[in-house]
Length: 247
Image 1 (cartoon, rainbow, N blue to C red):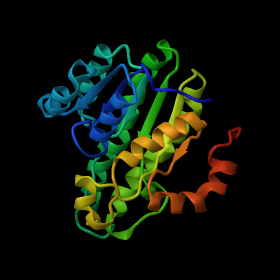
Image 2: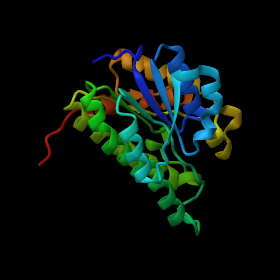
Image 3: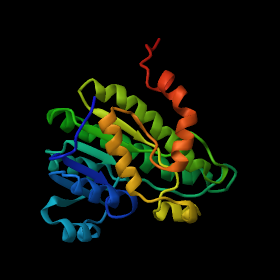
Image 4: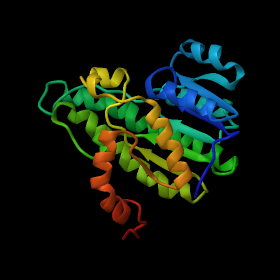
């Protein structure tokens, strides 16, 4: 199934910087009718409004606050595409004293926030014809790195949830994408010490559009992601993307 974002109404979480900001800009420039810029602080979306006018509508969403997600869903009842881009990163190894606290913090945003977004917006997407639900995961949802093991675990859990959403929301005609960037220029890549190898965030936006046009579930947008995705492709096609009957 293919999908064209032209003239569609889109919501992007974490829209004020990094990948989220690039997504908002790219979608508007590709002909989206309106983009809800979902942020924790509404004033942080002001530069996007100044640039694009009424095409961008700031809206409050804090993935740590389920009530904010539910309230946003009551406002953005015309949404046809939801991109859950927002997430958090804290570096911690499994034997670090703060490992449990760090994992708890990241699970709350990266996993429970994703579930909250799906629960609140799936009925809206269904009412508006099906649409698209996009989840920003990561290459670390597939491959764990020691210094950020708790972050990797949260992203692996998010990827698992995304797989379930693909089958569940597919029944209502909603396309689900799982996006797996490698190092992308953002505050998060800076915090992870990957500034020098990070690639432009527009690659993520272009990858999402290409996947929607090709009817793909997985998106590996940058060079690091493509390398991992190429090795993973056979397993993904034969296992992850195949419906299996549960006992």
